Image (tube, rainbow, N blue to C red; front, side, top):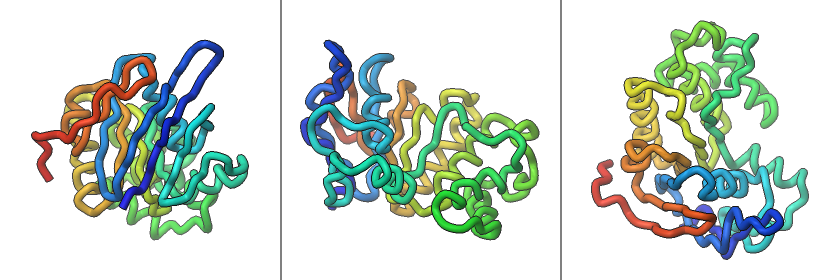
Length: 224
């Protein structure tokens, strides 16, 4: 069953078509890489999928529900309850420990639970670093805290924006291994990247150029 559908979605700024009649379906449990050069529309598509922006035209259907015309409050709730975000820049609060940064996401969703937050950190191999501040963590460790934060509310979709953009090769491989494990567990993943090595490990690869989807193919080299 489809988790997400974009139907003829466009985002227009004046004469600029940042996204132009995009049609995309994400099945439950699928791992998709969205790729393309700078200015191709990747960030625009990510913002629309994550409910942080609205399309100029078209429909966004999530788990059978058309969310295109929902109120800003409803979209905020939808984003909070359904989507876990992983950013290139981490966006951790520098005076909070790793476990406290994970618990912040719980605060906006329900009730902070340190035990659950520690379990989320354990899933990404960081339970022993739970009491460390971001400044005491490497870039790779900070990104794993971000992934734990994205997972804490059991979202239906993990949306990652250039998740390895600030990482060295060793930490990039650690993050990709976590994504592989999440996929095996049935998590739906959409990873926005310009890095071929990151894109080519996904189950399906969608390429954008000048706001249009120019290719959408299954990755024949994908391994579970």
